[in-house]
Image (cartoon, rainbow, N blue to C red; front, side, top):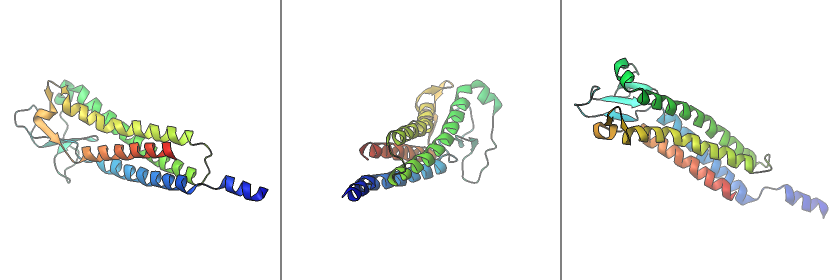
Length: 186
């Protein structure tokens, strides 16, 4: 009888294991979208009357002519001298996209360990996934802030439009939020 009770105590409930596996899947999807969204263009300049040439695209890794095959070669020192907050914000988004990549890997690993009953308490996993939610929110929030707020005497909303990298960041953040909500129920 005692052996049966101890066996049941060490078993992982099926619902908790299922939620942990779902968290691992959501974390991997979030990692995938963050990896893909980072090098893609975030904002494209479409207006002719702005201070920079038309058809420039900004990613978190730099500025370039729009298009997948164009290198990150365009750099206007005078523009960045006038608008230092722009370059600093893009660098912050790049840094946090790297940090969030690591948080997705650690979050998926922690959820997997929790599913295998290697982690007794879910508090560390909750904290790891909360860190992932915060770090994955910064890249898309920085881009949205550049787009909607007045930077360098203009709003990018008036002279440009979002590009494919931005929705990838948003989807990545949604996956982190979903993982965090699921771990609260595990």
